[in-house]
Amino acid sequence: MKKILVIAAMAVLSMGSLMAQNTFKGIITYSVTSTGETAFNVPEQMATAELKVYDDKVLTSSMVFTNSPMINSILIDGHKQFSCWDLSMIFMYLSQNDVELDYKGSSKILAKTELKQSSIDSLTIPCTEGYYIEYVAGETKTVAGINAKKAILHVFDDESTDHPIVIWYSDEMGPDVNLLFNGVKGIGLEYSTDLGEGRQLTLTATEVKKGKVKEVDMLLPSGYEELSEKEFTELFKQISEEMQYLQEE
Image (cartoon, rainbow, N blue to C red; front, side, top):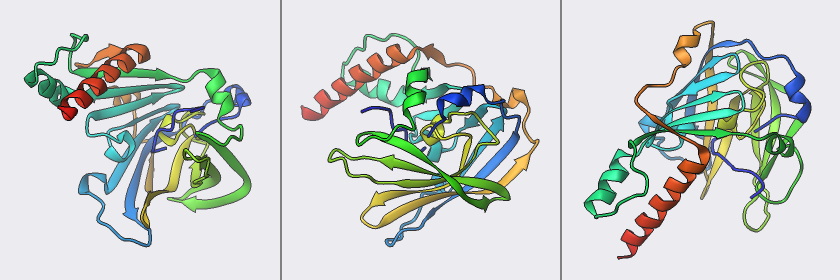
């Protein structure tokens, strides 16, 4: 695929790096609701979500953004993403099945990802695989008291069929490329995700509290062993292979 689709959540023109850094500081609260033709109960742990924003940093521990019960927190810092993984349950399962991993470190891992400029530049280039972002000029709406602009995330399946996602965002807060929203400028304030079979999940910002965050509030929890993107990819590859082997036995 041309780029990595996160689920979330889209990016910046190459000239974006020349723009002044946003100085918004605050907390954004979201509601997560079922909005499709087929209604379903949203799990309690996913019914609300929260982002802390400090200039171009964004911190969250909400599952709707982490997309995994194994990720405790995610910090976006400019073009970098730091994810706090707790793999203790997986490590225990593998150990109980006499599987020995090449990795000998802690089960609490800080995984780092950094976008290269070439990836950032490609985010708005139309394609028929992976995804790209279309920024729609002249269309706005108010979400939680914030003037939001419209973007469309064009997501393509294996048959090159487009499954567009409309995202209402503000580029006056957060980083110029936000990996939580698949690279969208700033902060996504409202979008819906099609889950298939008539089910749809909509995330909407319900409150924006300005000035409620200090830089110390953006620190990740301690006790995690940092791995590079390459090291973490190699570890996850081995875990996936071992898990598949055990399931086939």
